[in-house]
Amino acid sequence: MGVFEIIGPSMIGPSSSHTAGACRIGFAARALLDEPLVNAAIHLHGSFLATGEGHGTHEALVAGLLGMPPDDERLIHSLDLAHQQGITFSFLPLDLGPQAHPNSTRIILQGATRALILTAASVGGGSVHLQEIDGLAVEIHGTLETLVCWHQDTPGFLARVTAVLACVQVNVATIRTSRLGRGEQAITAVEVDGRLPGEVAALLSKSPTINRLVILPPLPGF
Amino acid sequence: MNYQFRTSVELLDLCATHDCSVAEITLRAEEEASETPRSEIESRMLEYYRRMKDSVQKGLAITERSRSGLSGGDSKKVLAHSAGSQVSVMGAVFERSIAYALAVLETNAAFGRIIATPTAGSAGICPACLLTWQEVREASDEHVSRALFTAAGIGKIIGHGACFSGAQGGCQAEVGSASSMAAAAICELDHGTAAQTVNAAALALQNTLGLICDPIGGYVEAPCMMRNGLFGLHAFGASAISLSGVASIVPFDEVVGALREVGNKMPRIYKETAEGGLATTPTGLRFKSTK
Image (cartoon, rainbow over all chains, first blue to last red; front, top):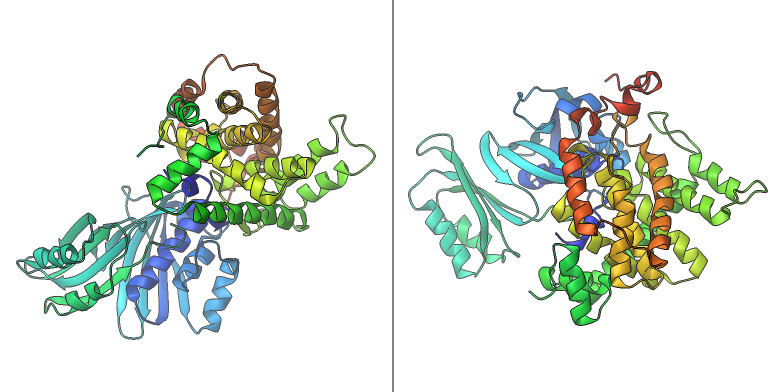
């Protein structure tokens, strides 16, 4: 446990789950969309739905979608700022079932050319757990740099990814692949120690089975 | 790895072996584990201390009530009283310290920037104690911010042996931990030995055991704010007892074990659910969120 996990995070109140964690989830969603945002449909579950409004969760999620870190003092004005930028958004109730963490959200983003669906939970102390991207299960905590690949399920895919990482001496912390079905759309998320050099994205993009990739930086404040 | 510790026994061993303070060992442990230069860690901590002070000043200026109506303008009143003719027999410093802790929680409730130490709901205690100490001793920010490493060292031991979350361990895990960390910080600033510093943490923590998390309406405001104000004073008391040479009967690591045990056995209704304690008194229920 690092000293800044105890003295910190630096954040906008009132609650690390309702504001800091929510903001980080919004930030992650926007980074995964990786293009200008047009519309956000933000679904809230459990305690996020019940008490989120009084706790600033709406503002925190939108602040994250605008790329603000959790200690940005403009956070509480994020809804107005989004309007000014021409971004439309709505908040909707959603029941993710009894197994879902009480502070969960599903964010559906429409960008200029693509859409993104992220399901995530704010699990306490500002920590987050990204659980699903575009309907495929992932396990991303946002504390480490994470390589996210949207790809076809093909033999040797992971060998190719890990070979590139081995070449640049990057250590894999966790790796997880999920797919819709055999040979269909899949997502692989690789959490790594340290930073991925720029050539990783360039090298992997040459793989014909990769549709898209995003290097998600450690979420702000981590 | 030469400076890592998980218990106060290990921490005190390191302090003795290297003839260092708790703050210094904690700083070396961070340097070692994060592979970050010492100067960078120190300047980030200094920046955090300055943000803590900003959160105090911002709170003291608040005059409006919060969205929930549970707080706002209270720290200003307490500060004004501390400067008046009816100041308590404990003196103006005593009251100012309360005002500073309330101020941070008011900033928090007003969507202002705070440093969660160790959590948002307990973020007033360390800033209040350190700022009060700084004003009385007339010390620099650089000097005082080093005590945040003392606080962090104690926090690491609590985090390892128990937890900081009200939802998991009740208020004792939040306000209790913050008070324990603050007691150690001011004890070491007042030239307490490493053993006295850890002992101050033990004294503060053991006297918060059993404290439930019963936020009215589910908001991080009441009783959170007043608990920050009053348990900041608790930290000063624990530090004073320790500096006098009086030792806690139960050593710190065992107190942390008790914190964990009490937290585990505490009923769920007293763990940030707003389903018991002050939250479900007739008055508390009036603030229940209708959303």
